[in-house]
Length: 443
Image 1 (cartoon, one colour):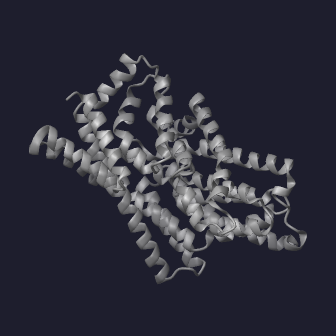
Image 2 (cartoon, one colour; image 1 turned 30 degrees about the horizontal axis):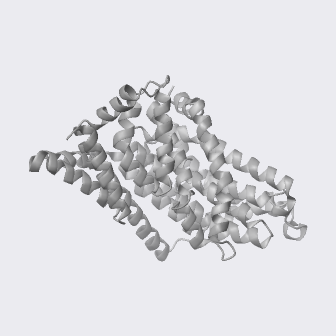
Image 3 (cartoon, rainbow, N blue to C red; image 1 turned 135 degrees about the horizontal axis):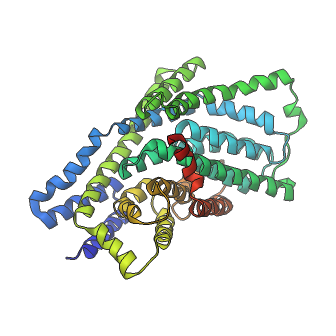
């Protein structure tokens, strides 16, 4: 059996198992282990085992549960709710101000937890009902919450980038820094879109009445204190890490500790809260761990049979594709897969093929895998909100008020998909948008 046929068999079998409803880690791990037994017999069982066991010697793995814990604590402590009250007062007089404030809120929440789920939950349960009550167009604000929440996997500390760094063996710090400018650029496009839409049609976003916003300047300034805790947590975690004072693992511990102290300071720390947070953290962390183990086992078999070199020969030699055409094919495949799979499933399926292939491409600049990690993460944002099976679509439907229907949710996301796609194109055309900051900090 040729390497090309073995590669197609492995991918095809994996997709069939996933379509039957099997868990992602079970499908991928089963295919990897089954293929190595079929090719090498019982003597080959050491291949996936050795690859998976490397994970336990990789200390950045410790950051995952700590970052996930931090995000859940900040959500349970009501810090996001306080932030929204502040933004409501300071942006209420601007046309579309609450929608713009919601985008800012999503960026702040992203900078605190690195998960899109937390941003979606906060936006759907806090921001959406408030904006609906004030007469905002439901399609517009549904798109704002979905688009804004997706920033959680791009703005540091991104858990998805930690996962990519583990599988691709790239520095997580460089990936985080590379996501800063693309994330802020995307958020800027979202804000400009809201401003233009509300200027053209003011009825989409009525200005909040003076009665609601009339308060002394002293009270408004007090509300600004809601932003102090998130800033201090972000600085203690990311700032100290970038300055080289703490390592990646130490930074995640600082963030988790700071979030816990913030919950205590606000009087919202309780045994019930810590119990619920611990259960959620354990569930998500175990899911990531099993996925990484399966991906490493699958990748070891895939690379061992020479499939990567065979695919490289197919693309570059036989089809005579240019390096940029190969990258475009990869991005298109991410978008197609993102309609049916979540971000982690996409990564563990294609990483064994794409990561080694990107290393061999001559794109004309350094740090290609860091840049590719940003492209992958940005494409995941589209996958989150793209029908028919975008994860955030159904999450939004389950948490949104009854006034918002599934057709409303589907209609709301297309402008944001276009803006995300445009941002991806810009990062592909101008790689320094992503690479300038990590190179500047490293030098």
